Amino acid sequence: MRPPIKPIAPRKSQYGIDPALVTMRGSDLPGMTSVLLTDLFPDLPPVIYPGPEGVAAVRRATEQALAGVDMSMIQPGDSVNILASHHGFTLLGGEAYAEMLRTIRDVVRERTGTEDIRLRAGVGLRFRETEEYIKRFGLDEYFQGKAMGIAPVDRGIPIETEIGTLYGIARAYDAKWIIHAHNSDVREVHFHRQVDRAVKPFGMSYARIETRSTYHQNLGPRAANFVARAIFESPFVQSKFAFTCFLVMAPNGVVRVDADNNLYAVNDRITRDGCRYYGKVMTLLGEIKDCIAILDFPAPVPYNFAGGVIYANFCGVNVDLFDLDNPLPPYTWYTE
Image (cartoon, rainbow, N blue to C red; front, side, top):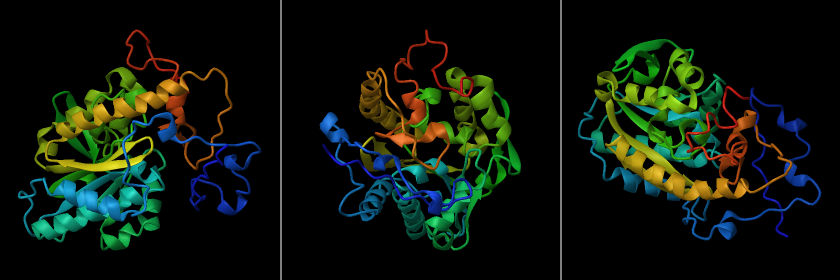
């Protein structure tokens, strides 16, 4: 039997217990073993991270992806907000996502001549979470004091959309240009069902609590996706949007970096990848009749990872999330 895969070491956080109190992990239980995803699914794509080059491979992939992006709209002296989400920092320890953010800053600075490049990192309901990530990965220093966490309870800004007035976080949009820096991890597929996955942060990480609550509580997994699309397609956001850059994931790691001036082009590509690779893992897990799930990750219960998917996905793997005859997936904010 293969030895168990060790989880990342616990880190000090106001949202978790003191690491000194963690004396045993799930992988330490007697009889634990592991199986490689590539043994189960040999057609999974090769990954650039984790790998022998470390985050240098992520930097090179980001530079190559950005080489095909038009940045001519950004002039010397213009202010630029790189918009990030806390989800990215939970993938493979977070260093790959942090390196993509650093590289975006460096390339934009080199190609456009502007020095006013900020990082705005959004969160869910753990309002100070990205502040911890910013310090942990040295992003406050790397962005020369211009990195900050933004929370859904921060001051909002009204955004007029085709479905009415919605609300973004003011600090997300307080620059002349915005760069949408995200990842393709399917994560909450029980909510978005791969519909406009790439657009989702505009209704979540960059949105005020009133608007993101519309996503979760008012509309839910059947209709909420058009909230994010309405915000992104608003004249206000379109007047600021420069380009997007994505860390592209498979269940076994980082596959590549994708960047484009057309967010929907990226959305199409990551939708295909998500269905192609993550669907197999979920289908296999759906064949398990009885099991004990061990949750060993410093995150809210639904967001514990294993095999590239979160526990909330695991709760719903015995139901076809794309079958509209099923009124709701087994796990939603309505059922938890």
